[in-house]
Image (tube, rainbow, N blue to C red; front, side, top):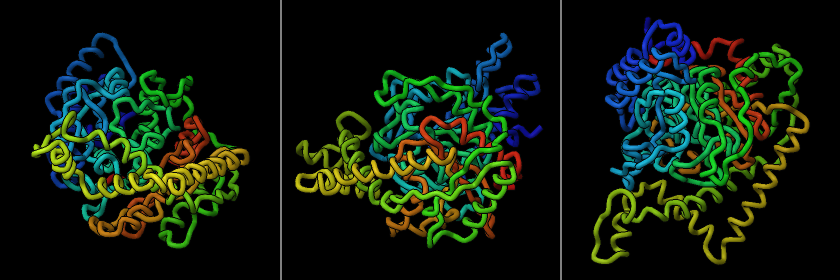
Length: 483
């Protein structure tokens, strides 16, 4: 049995039936990482000894009759989550060597559920990017084509799952950083409702937009990860104190009578024709499964990109001010305190510096109301668009990204072109609703295409079930990278 070919839920079933062990599955993953990750570079840190120790403990617990939701299943964690005793860099040189004394809430939940942590995956610095090229260490490559980006900022997590180097993974989504790499790598990625998963212990980028989300090879895998991570946490003031439903039980595959809205603003000039065709074909399949397809309008969509790139950098400017060489990471000494700040902060990468400068300008005296204040008002209009749409439909369907994965370096000198990669995903973050990407095809170069499904607040069960129904009626999820 090729353990690396199993999905998360298939491995869980095999473990429960005694067909394999967590140690065997973990060793198979570690061997695969050694064999192929030098080419893909999805991991920043591999905790092999710790993983095997956790796997051995999981097998011992199972032998004693325990059966927690992810017992013995090897998974990966984006290097933006604090991990007790394991270096956490957020993809930045300015945090090199930082070893947190505690686990982030989501990591803690994974461990409590029995998961084995294989290591920390690569990310754009402080989750600022759409390609993982902005990592302070190296660029992750797309397992479907090593000359292409895996998306970002959670590109390392998406690539690890796609290349069968983890059965599931955690990422974060501030403007599309789970859904867009999921689309580029042909895996399933969920951006839950804002506050559904605690951000405690997650290195902050833009606090009103950041949200923790899982990756899986299939909808069921992604749901299993989400089931564990979701929940209230009093340590996070934005955490939602709401019951967590049985998301796995909600995967019935029955979507008859469900109203699926298709926003006309998401099929725009410049979208790759093969992407539009694949998404239209996916909509036809949903109709065949009994859903009602309805054309809707989200009229303020065109403002989402500029609004996001005022709010997110402004919040980043405030959050990243704490990195001064005094409390975290390296300290580059200068003759004065100001010079120490300057030398240490030179460790920030180009994109982080760009966003800090944009945000600081937007928040500065004389410009605050003209830029940041106005952006907050337009954000409300965007949110209202979604609220009005969900009075007509149950789910919104659209492309995840306007294109398939672009070549490494292709957009490095064109920040605006890079920002446009998230044009279909970031409105969800501004509206605080939930969204996911599920594989829906490939272009002529065998690069993956993702279908985005968007739900109203706390309607993850609905979009997961629609994605599950679509997945079960198609074969896209059965195609593997590097095969």
